[in-house]
Length: 223
Image (cartoon, rainbow, N blue to C red; front, side, top):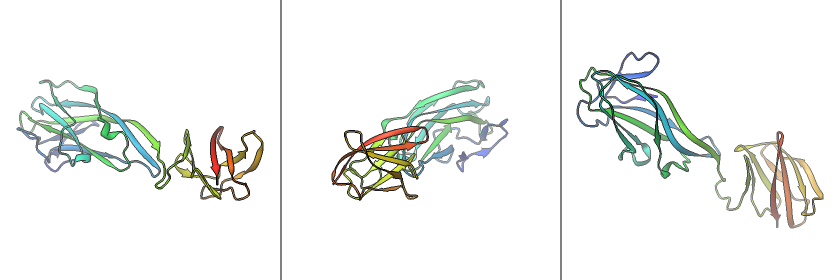
């Protein structure tokens, strides 16, 4: 969590507190900021933000949320703050569909403004992001088999499969069966997550990947 250059840190009893908020309209330098970024091999689905906030008796009367997706141009939400010093807990802000599949970092800024006096403070606390990290299909893979956190690609395959568990290469145990359920190949993926199909003739197979106590199955065609 960080602050814009227009506000100054203040005492906040283990919260993030600041003074010098704009006493008029929204000032582009008066904000709290934080970023969320996906790990390699994942995209993010961000559903909502949640936080608590409190003003002093002369603090802000309005706040707005913006993001880096549009270079902090449009308000996602604007909120009028009651004229009291109560703590408003677990305010939930639903995010629009533009946050459903993020493959890069996004920065959020919470702007406070319309303070009753410059020395008035505003604090936020317990900031949380609700959503999920989703295993992404690697670039250039047009048809991959995904089950839970296990990704097997390409499909169709030629001599080699790539296996990712939770977005990472793994030495997972692999069993290949024909469509009658007979085992035709068995082994472990290499350290780089590859598994050779070179010994198999062309055809359709079931690839069983053991991920801890969970086994996933993937129908794969070999050309």
